[in-house]
Image (cartoon, rainbow, N blue to C red; front, side, top):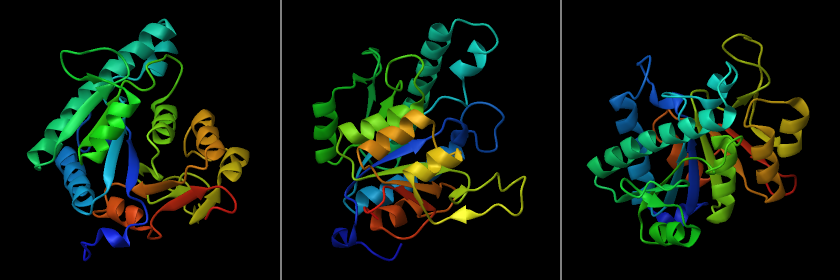
Length: 247
């Protein structure tokens, strides 16, 4: 990245949504250390520009509650297991960030005080104001809600100016580009278009929460170095999902 100036930033506080599957990298299960380091380096660049960064992490690389519930397990128990998986991922991200010289705090929506802090909105904002990266674990703390919904909720709660969804593709497509070579990539989408076309961006609850609170969402390819920084600068990277009139 060629710029160091925080004055060029369009967004000074962002929330990044990372899927658990994104941490798999070349592994079949668990966490690829190379992916962790890559994410930490990109976030270090954001931090160096003066961007306040919060992260919401999923747990699908370790355990997906909805999947086991579909096979007969009690959904509440399965979702609680999924929440614990996100805590494992959050601690791994915290370690990777600290190895890059950053200060990071893990905050959990469920009480697990021996390993991390409880999520308290005002405390999370204070951490951000002090330049610490806040890693938000355990989703919303409630079963039946995805980590996408948790990311939308936390982005609104902490007054983030932008939510970044980190994926393995360079934006939102009309179909799966891996299966359909004619799939069209969108530069800009309205939240209502996402809902009407049933595009695979986030679940409907997460989309509606962003729409109703006018929270812009930038979907980027996390494997492209500098994608997070470009999003914070307001560059046209990936796909911007917003509300009509707020582009």
